[in-house]
Image (tube, rainbow, N blue to C red; front, side):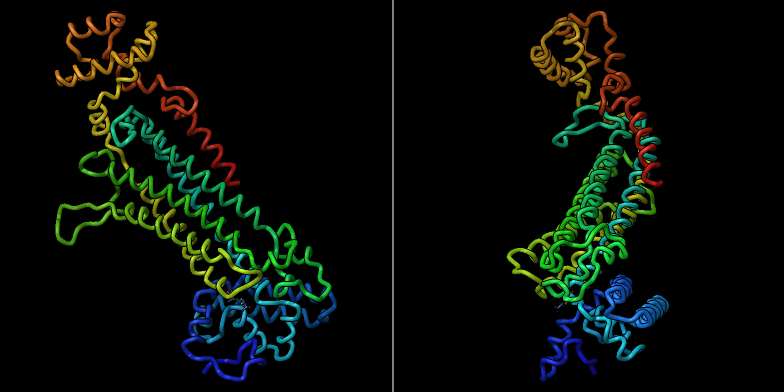
Length: 465
Ligand code: ARG
């Protein structure tokens, strides 16, 4: 048995059951219920101010809506038990069940089109704020890691070939920078969607003389939308949020990939906590980085949702079309997935521990000091291009001897590096010296990393206030 439809007058025939199920959005838009109720309360008040409803009617509607909000909070299964078409129908039907004819007055001048656009923006605001605070928490975890591991020296890579040594703290703070931009994209998107569609009607605006700016303020928006068609037909705010989620997920997937490698036996730089690894059902020795692999995998899923939302809007005629109902599952899943991934990523970061000996041992191979040796020649007046070539030749010689650049035979050193005869190369090419030299702004010198950590701590504090 299905209840009467909100739009029941025009059609005489019953819906085909397959289409009826196909058409329903309550199974997935029920999470908008509290937003729909808040929007309805504001709408009732606006109708009161416009003298469409009497003050006593507004009061009755508002208290019934608040009661409904209570009931739904107490028993979320109320929504699952309902056969309403969507969340808006659910709220309206419940109101009519409570108030009879008065409940039927609430939809005056309103359409589900401006209603759903408003509900979604209210939802988006709350969900984006949750994601922002999780990003901040992950950044805090990375800053803690940077502080713990500031003196751990990792081989830094380009082309996945060992390149130059870096502080593990510097590596962690790279992800803090990336995540802060991801968070910035979310906040920017929120600022652009800070307008209230309610009062736009189905597409042309409402015929009742409502103070839409006051309504917008009542719902916590900065202003009312300026064009009714735009208000009901646009979903770019969702596209922007899911784009911001996608870039955050890309950041997580790169961190995941770095750490999957760091934690491999091939590298052995990083130990992941047992909290985020699993074993094998077959091989008793395994410790698999499943959490990180899922972070990497779920990035694809969120990016897929962006594609869904973009293609949903491509070539869509103005104004509302039912295609737009498809925005919900994509948006909700993108935001849920991103939120869950950020939480798990923070657990991974808080439990991770570098193995400083293994990291340092890896820095001993691969001539990570070659650039510094060339720079020492430059300091003695050799043009960099010539120094580069000379060190390149020495790298070949060192490989033949099976030694590092600072352990070359005295004969080779005298022949190729006469300018450096007075220097203690072991000291000059130590990891400590190599790192210390890079104390330029943004560099990996521990003093710089320390300063960056302090800047981050101040920034995190100002976010928390
Ligand atoms: N469930 C619909 C959606 O999510 C609500 C809007 C319905 N509007 C309409 N004209 N049928 O898009």
